[in-house]
Each structure stands twice: as structure tokens, then as C-alpha cells.
Length: 375
Ligand SMILES: NC(=O)c1ccc[n+]([C@@H]2O[C@H](COP(=O)([O-])OP(=O)(O)OC[C@H]3O[C@@H](n4cnc5c(N)ncnc54)[C@H](O)[C@@H]3O)[C@@H](O)[C@H]2O)c1
Image (cartoon, rainbow, N blue to C red; front, side, top):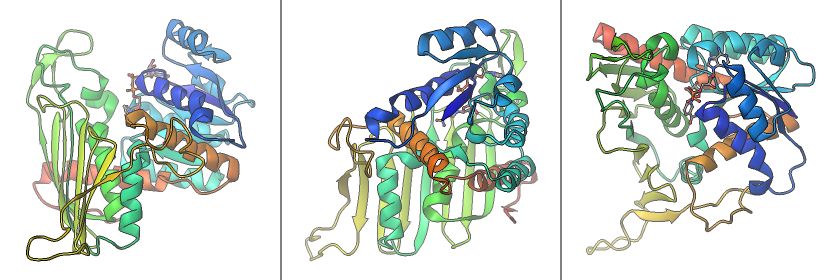
């Protein structure tokens, strides 16, 4: 399977790592995948990427790659506002698509793309890589086994510190004109997806945005008015009645990649912290109890490098894991679906649901009212 990689910044590199190393992590793969072409906005960076990482050719024209009949898959790692047009062209060309989040910048665009991809019969997956961390996969198993019972509430947060320095220039992720939103799009999308994946469909949201630094230097180094949320807070209700909070922030001093999720059900509870990616914490009310507490308490489950076959062979089930392993798992899931024709998850439909939730949260921030999801 020949992949055309569009964008070679942090995520282009991450996807390239995943493709290149897939055979280490997944044993005896029945398919071979390689990145054939790369496209960035400057020919020097594109050529450097191709030379350094061994891609066949470099380009600054994505159309040339999308329309190349030898390319089977388009992998989209460009800034958010470009996704929609690229997606339309890639679907029209009949390519399978692996697209970074968020799928688009409006819900209408996202639903249109999900529909187009379905009608064209191409295999399409959104990159919600946190679903492929071993503890999140284990959490999904526990929930599907009914061991939490009815889910009552959740508390989630994705916290970075990258906007805490007022002397730092804004990047494109702080610029609504390129990002399409702010931290809600960048970090919040992952959290909304996991709440949706683990707890259920969203019913309504109440949102509040926060900009801590109104003025800073923009991408060109000149004074610039911040135009996108640096933090976003959501109170959400799900269709199953669960209620919880979602916080996304880049103004959290002292944080690195601090993603946490807590889910509380009638029969049990789960906790995960991305800064401690080896462990899932599970509280089971079915555990033996006596007046001294019995065996009650959160159990630290050793998820470590335990991936279902053929994924656990390297570097081994006991080897500590991290953020990158989730991306390798996500890439494997997608390529395996391209090869087998099975349905992808997370799909573009999932991506459109997340996009709608984010849009409603922004609407709620403006209207100061709860907004209902309605699709
Ligand atoms: N899933 C994750 O873990 C995760 C993490 C970070 C970013 N992302 C997403 O990945 C995407 C890329 O983010 P990034 O952090 O890699 O950005 P980046 O700024 O590091 O890289 C962007 C790349 O796109 C290229 N580019 C820009 N405009 C282009 C155009 N018009 N045509 C072709 N190439 C173009 C740039 O040259 C650069 O190579 C975004 O959608 C972002 O939301 C996902």
C-alpha cells in the first residue's frame, strides 16, 4: 500500500514513524505499507523529509500526489483549515484516507465528508490516537463487559502549558483563521472523542472559553490579538443521562501532556492519566467487602505494553509504553481495515459527531445557554 503523506510537521513525522516501524510492533503482517510521496509547503523541507526518511519523492503540490494512480492512501497531516478541500479531492480520486483531527472546521463540512466517503466506498479513519493506548483499550473492555454498570458521571481534562508564556509567539494552533478553533479543537477533540467512545453519545453541552493573554506576538512576530480560546470548559450531558466535565487548556502551568479521564458508574469506576500511561485504575464494587474495607479500593491494572495479537510481540507485554505507541496502534488499525475491507473505528461518522459537539460548545459559549446536539 503506497501512502501519500501531506504535511511533515510533528504529526507527519509521527505517522511516518508508525508506518516505518509497524513490522516491529505487529508480527507477520499480511500487507506492506510504505510512504511513497511527501508534500509540505516548501520544496526544501519536502525534499529534506524524503531524503532523510527514504520516501520516493517530494512535492509541494498535493494534487500531484492525490492524482497519482500509484498512491492508494492519502494521509492528511496539514493544518486544520486545509483538511476539507484535501478530503474532497482525495475521496473524488478514490483514495483511502487517514486524516488528523479535527476532521474539518465545521460540523456541516464534517458530515458532508463522512457521507461522501461512505458513498465512494473508501476506507477512512480519523486519528483519535488516544483510543489506541493500552489502558483505554482495557477500559473499553471493562465498560463493554458491564462492570461499571450505568455510567453516572465523568471528569476529564487535557492540559498543556504551551500558552503560559506571554512572550511566546502564537503558532497556527492559536490562530482561529488556520486552526478553525482554539484549544477545544486541538486538545478538546481528543477528550470529547474518548467520552463519546467510552461513555456514550452527547445530548447537550454548556461551554465557556477563556483567553488569558489578549495580546501577544503573532506568527509573523508582530503584535497580534489572540483570536482563539486558550482554555475551554464544558459541562456535558450524554443521551444515557451521564453528566460530566471536559476541560482543555494550554494555560495550565506545570503541565506537559496531562490528559486525565475518570468515569464513575453504579458498580465501578475507572481512572487514567496519560502521564502514567502504563496503568488503568479500576474500582469494582463487586470486590470482597467487610467492615475493614475488605479488598475494596482502586486496583492498578498493568496495561503496560499489552496489545492484542499480533500487536504485543515487541518490545514485549511488560515493556513500558507511551503516547507514540497509541499512534502506531491507530495506524495499524487503519491499514488493517484498508487491507481487509473491514469497517474503521474511529470513523469519519465519529469525527463528525465530535465536530458537532465542539461546534455546539462554541455556540453555547456565545449564547450562554445549554445547546442540544440534535444530530
Ligand atoms: N493526533 C494527535 O496526536 C495530533 C497532535 C498534534 C497535531 N495533530 C493534528 O495534526 C495536524 C498537523 O499538525 P502538526 O502539529 O503536525 O502541524 P505542524 O505545523 O507541525 O505541521 C504542518 C505541516 O503541514 C505543512 N503544510 C501547511 N500548509 C500546507 C498546505 N497548504 N499543503 C501542504 N502542506 C502544508 C507544513 O509545511 C508542515 O509540514 C493538525 O490537523 C493537528 O490538529 C494531531
